[in-house]
Image 1 (cartoon, rainbow, N blue to C red):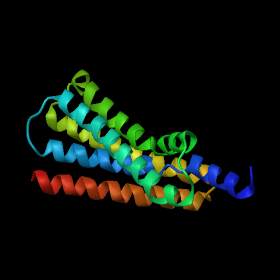
Image 2 (image 1 turned 90 degrees about the vertical axis):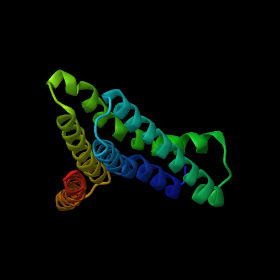
Image 3 (image 1 turned 180 degrees about the vertical axis):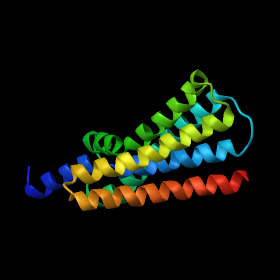
Image 4 (image 1 turned 135 degrees about the vertical axis):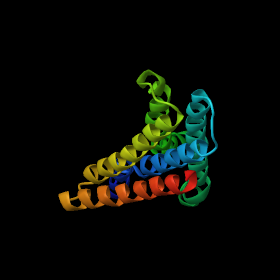
Length: 166
């Protein structure tokens, strides 16, 4: 393995951009569904998971037929690598979906369910950004900075939810 390929592989393993993006996507799905009124929880769980998979597929497609195709021929190894690299988009949808699924056990009504799922999605967004920064070897200041930026972005989504529902 040459030095450039090794560096690229290490960077891909520490790149959780898809997780941050997927968490923001999940928060947006929760807001959109929560603003529509009453709906079954199972519908929101499925909407979160299916949306994550569809966006994962879109990102895989964009990587394979965008930048990757211009740089190297496609083979099974490249396809699986891209699928794996983009999988955090789907992973990020799971915790909010689980939050929705367990909300009846917590005695939450629809509004409580939406707030729980939204909180979990924002926490995931911050968590993914911190994990990415730490795995990339960022300084403590940079880790705190990325956490703060992602928390601010998450809070903007929360403000949007408040504006949409009031």
